[in-house]
Amino acid sequence: MRALAVIEDGLLVALLVLLIVMSGGQILFRNLFGVGLMDLDSFSRVLVLWLGMLGAVAAARHKKQINVDVLSPRLPKRMRAVVGVVMDLFTVAISLVVAYYSWSFLQIEFESGATLFASVPAWTTIIILPLAFGLMAFHYTLHAIAGIFQLRQIDKPL
Amino acid sequence: MILIGILLLVLVLFGAPLFAVIGAGAMLGFYVADIPLTVMATELYRLAEMPVLVAIPLFTFAGYLLGEGNAPRRLVRLTDALIGWLPAGLAIVALIVCALFTAFTGASGVTIIAIGALLYPALREAGYRENFNLGLITTSGSLGLLFAPSIPLILYGVIAQQMDAGREVSINAMFIAGILPGLLMLALLVAWSLWENRHRHMQAVPFNAGELVAAIRESAWELPLPIVVLGGIYSGFFAVSEAAAVTALYVLLVELLVRREIGWRRLPEVMRESMVLVGGILIILGMSMASTNYLIDAQIPTKIFAFIREHVDSKLAFLILLNVFLLGLGAILDIFSALVLVVPLILPVAIGFDIHPVHLGIIFLANMQIGYFTPPVGMNLFIASFRFDKSVAQLYRATLPFFFILLAAVLIITYWPGLSLVLL
Image (tube, rainbow over all chains, first blue to last red; front, side, top):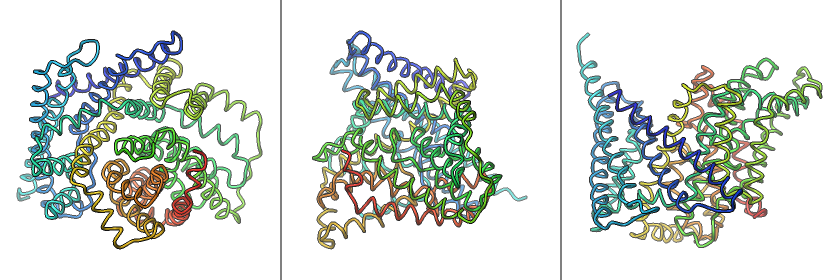
């Protein structure tokens, strides 16, 4: 589990550093040599997608996805835990469905053989979608399991 | 259909992550309309097709990094040396510093934590009333939202561009339109600080040229930043994403190599924390592009417009309705979710009522800014409550006068389009 966190965070940090250095460097290039590198442009946009998705995975791991949650803090403790588990499972279900359809999108692109830039096949950049949603489903499954254990704690007579 | 809407709303109110709820809504819609659900993936993939989005991770990271070191302390010292000698000087310092800092860090609550923690004790020591003090800091946490390069301004521009609003909504136009309304808010709060403290005789701090020079020297590495970024953007020398790249690279180099206030070990954590926010924003943006696509397909905005048109016939009445709606919205939803969810619905309606899309953006964000400290769920109330160890109820009371002042500003901004549009 720790290993997964290290890999997720490591990739996130590496891509952010890459994005910063690359977009900074690109401006230098443009102003010093008067050439814009088109390929780098689309590469940095793909990086943003990957960063966003990996950031969303990190948010899922720490349960920091943007939500509203005005009602559940008012519920009694036990109900609150139950609602929490239901919401986690709902998130797992949605993430799995999106992961599944991202996977079919990946296959379609793979078969079409479209290329993006510098003859990089488009499908390689899409991998992040099923991967990220799969990981999010995984993290929310863990949250749901933790929630169920918490429920059993509450139910235990003192 | 209505039943599903209610079900989704219940899921939201019980704390389901917004991206999942929006995704569920979009997928249901596509499923009913017999559109293959791979469309979800193609819509999400569009996140990689918008050049301006590059600015969001870069600015957010730079803001988090700036808040982490001693830059906030230096900024306070410099502003204090510049204008601290005025009556109610320290309160004005607080307002200006918070506005500047929020513009750069994107109103994510960082301002209250990084700046409030410095200014709150200083204000108390200088003899300001506690509730004034608390109200000022909590309110200022979202001040500056309308100034470049704040993330919500960028995000509104991105969404409006996706909508094809008829009139061009460039990010630069948003940055320019925010200047005067932002200054109006600042000016009203400064006026209130002067008025509130008119009978209080606080120790006047004389202007000290030596201190000013020392403060400038101390801030020498940060000073070029607002000049390069704002100057670069407003003069058109930099595109927004380029300004973001310069900012991120510069801040990274200065903090790591020159200041060395953030260790190599801390850096990955700051990066992850900032990307958690970016991921949270981009995933709801991606999901909402899918749901917007469905809504437009199903002609929902057109139907809403027709419905409102039946009951509301003047632009003025519509604007009043809009204000009430947005204030309520801001009290429940955070600014990013509100932007991605609601702008696609109301933008076509507002255009139908002949409201300029750029003006609508400023109205929207100005209302949301108040939402940051409107009960029951204004985020800054809780951050301040946590940070200063005060009850949320006390913060409700403390922010009340500030609420009414900013409400007045919002009304002026709403009913005087020229304030937003004159500089365009």
